[in-house]
Image (cartoon, rainbow, N blue to C red):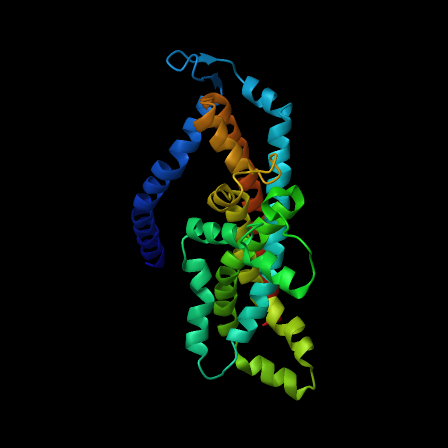
Amino acid sequence: MKDVIRERERRTGWLLTIPALLILTLVFAYPILRAFWQSLFVQNLGNQLNPHFTGLSNFARMAQDGRFWQSMVNSAIFTFSSVAIELVLGMGIALVLNQSFRGRGAVRTIAILPWALPTALIALGWTWIFNDQYGIVNDILLRLGFIDTGINWLGNPTLAMLAVIFADVWKTTPFISILLLAGLQSIPNDLYEAQAIDGASPWQSFRQITLPLLMPQVVISLLFRLAQAFGIFDLISVMTGGGPGGATETVSLYIYATVMRYLDFGYGAALVVVTFLLLVLAVAIASYFLTRSRAKASGAI
């Protein structure tokens, strides 16, 4: 009897899952498969109506494309820098918002506002903030006497990268803080009380209780942010357009330029495929650590 019930539950589960799988196939699988097929052809403005099959020639071209590798380096610098800073700041904000104090609800609402605002609008605002003539950053530095003349933040390769990282951190740190706050609220207070009775310090409680039990939320946050940051487009497109001299051009901007500006559809599809495979690899690694973190958290409890 139990086997019959389990079989019915399994069939019911599959019936409920099939519509979602079909939607995922149409939304995600088909475009990726289409891009992979198109990457095997040379199709550009010159032969748009008559693309010819060239196998892996687009991928061979990619291996020798210095602009592609530079965009990969820019994407890696932007991704790991912004995500690392966001994780540290998000953890601190989540710990503060998890405390009981007057007006906590209002503070939580205000803290999430930067993430809720449109990215393009935020990027435009930060463009004016970092403006070398009228920007508030230069105005503050001039008033404090740290500089004598305005700094061209978005015109210097290093400073432009720092500016877009700063803007992204300001925008998306609330996202991580909210995810971590949800994890903090799921940790029983009894664990902290027992740890305090044993004479543990707040740092020991954080290291021995909070961090192990919060690790699944940390990994999930990193998973989301790594994928989002690696595929960043709108923020950098509005602030710098990939400049100066390609110093902030990410893979997404390079793909956009290849397809929409140069109309090289075959090579653009190859770039999409490689980017997708890299994201899949990142997801697989993050999933591995997520499984391990959950196992450790279960053991800690």
